[in-house]
Image (cartoon, rainbow, N blue to C red; front, top):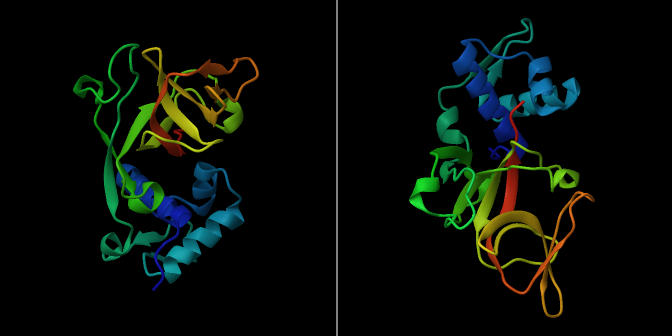
Length: 200
């Protein structure tokens, strides 16, 4: 049996979360609304999970999705990611006092490297689809390729920008025309963006 895709794993996790919170499963329309996709798209994901033996559906009722008992072992392995919250200027990003707890995420979404999460503040990356209040997941690394979105330390402050290596300097480019690029010869890469989590 094929493993669930990344999106199917997200749908499965939503079904489990909804079931825990409401004691009954969501409708296909509610699945579609949560992910901002069409009802047909949500239906296809649910049917794919059923084919893979992770859930069971009763097509004669609207709230009839059942999580199968063996789906926990069949679903993607989880990894716990430290949530580091808002970091004050001058405070080391990975300092223990920044840790606000952890998030459980499927390995299929974030990989097996060293990962951490930050709460996004501000609007400098809105044209990249990153908004104030989002939670960003990063792979911890000290190098990046041109065009990658990174979290970097510049002048003792942490910033989220798109990275470009120029001849004698680094350009950290915002994704909002209201914010000018940052040019520096002394940027320290802390991590590369992996994925964004948004609550509605």
